[in-house]
Length: 443
Image 1 (cartoon, rainbow, N blue to C red):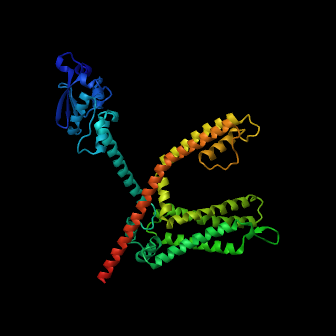
Image 2: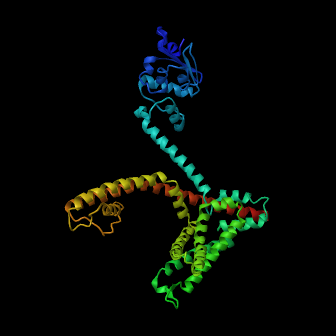
Image 3: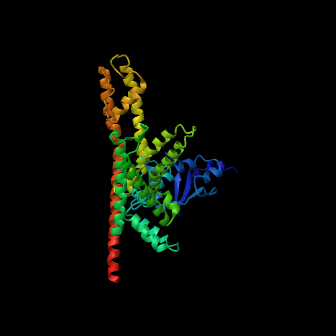
């Protein structure tokens, strides 16, 4: 006998199926299940093979038409009520995450929630999502570099056990990573911050023509004073990086840290520039573009600005926000791309026939739509016709709305990250204070 013949026999009693959910048994009529054929129990009636049935339930007995489900029997009472009334209600005491998993398993949609439970459901789910996001943000915070990050510091300190010169390396590492640890640690942090600021100022001053000098061949050379400060700062950065690498509990973990990668990228252009200058002085005919390479490498010194993130909670929070806001940033780029494409075509269509307008091509229209939607408004290109001005007005208004929508979520995430960063630093400071009190008592 085929399974389809067992499932659809002709006797009156066979218009029912027996469902066993975690020991709770219920006999349900076919007509009741057929009201919602897309649900799990409704799909059981359409199965014509044993394999198809086992894909929908955990086990079954063909002779008794009893289907077994290893699910929450308490929730199944609400499932039965759903088949009878067409509405699902929240289960008192059941986690909203478990509720969502249960309705997804039984094939019930959220739109079937009764109005008396819908508002509560969405509030609880939003609260659960916020807690889940806070948990992920905590993990993200703990995985990154942070000056006052106590948990990571404890893990790093434990890694020194059994290694060479453990006590000396541990003391140096703590002072380099935690400026609030002692007075010497604060001095190191202030010196590092001053070196970063001096390097940035020297780089900016070097770009000013008044500080440039010429050699006897009328070739532009670097100002010796600025060059001295530049070399001094790079020497400081190099010694600091090598020292931190030497005393790090794990060299692999150290080199994979984002802030340490930034430190390396701020140092390497200087040495690459020295190598290129040396090759250029050798008068090799194969190195005609060495000068351009040197200029590019010198511009890479701008990465030193990012070294300020090591001393700023705000910059670290900003980096964590961007890493955790890929969806919002992607939406922002998508919205702007659609709007720019649409308004560039509109402005080109209404301005192309005007001889006074500069918006005569689509690329120029793209540029105008970009600076208009982002509310920059350089004023280098602008519409001159009445229709063009109306399109420009609409473009600016749409740009304000499009930019404001994702920015709100990004700002909220930044606020949470910044608040958590401050809490971490406050906990670390409190822990250090308690440790100092205990040490003074013991002594």
